[in-house]
Length: 392
Image (cartoon, rainbow, N blue to C red; front, side, top):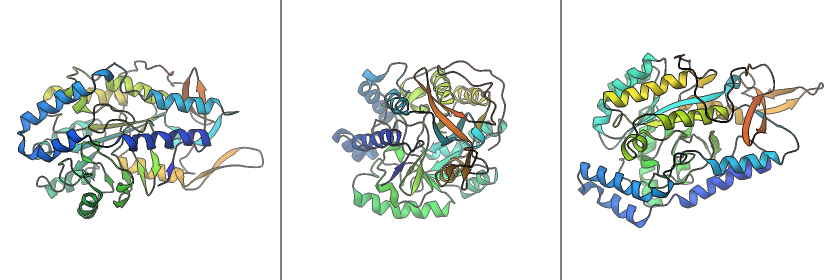
């Protein structure tokens, strides 16, 4: 399975491959979790939620510093590989038009109760000029096709979220292959091109069996999952037949339920980190948990904060994946005057950029034609709070 990263230079590519391989080695359920998912149908919901929260808090007690959601090891290794280069590395900028960052909103709908909250949450986003994807579980609860068609007509995207959300999708290769046939049928039925595994369990080799344009089962770093770890990178990457879109902002379940956070401070700090590095701010939230006025308000305020960042590119996950495919299918060439240009499907929207290290921070700067007067430094810093809806 081939991995192709943001920076094709050997050192950076090797860093990405090493972290994906390390995540794959660690993405294995413990015997405790295998037993838990086997007995899960017999455990009442309220007991299950308390057990999960208590286990995760205890399991990650050593990783609960304020900076747990920053992928420091990966970026440090990447910075070292770039510093070894003789000059700034020319690449096709991560985002169309040299946008400062990408903003991608996704939701996993875990239960029938969550499905009933979808429209309320969608309206919060619509009022801000935003759209998102809704990942549905095809064999757990009845799916209202009227709601699906309505969301799609309003500009939202539908994705598929596993088979039946029982935690046993990866119990064995045989189990995955059997369920993959039903997942592929659901992808076709709902006009979906993207997938995310329940509980962000993952096996990128097995996922190649799915007929998808992108997978979103990975993350940059998250010690609070049953399969902890992370691929480190804060950008999409090519993974075999599909584009992988890792989530890079902490999950709402982790912040609001497991850690009991009172506000979106972690979201805001991580956003600044991503903006400074031209990263992808991919959010994974659930209508099952954003189901109170207070939580909805926290989510709305963060979206307003994200829109206040100038120069962002808001996209549905399928749009982000298609752009990344175009970018991967293009190349940088030099003309007779040694001017850089982009050949290929990204030529119309792509921007040639340079990768450099600024005070131990990786920066990606367009070579020309893009105003960076509002660019932030490497350290997370508060931005202006003026809602500025952007178009996908």
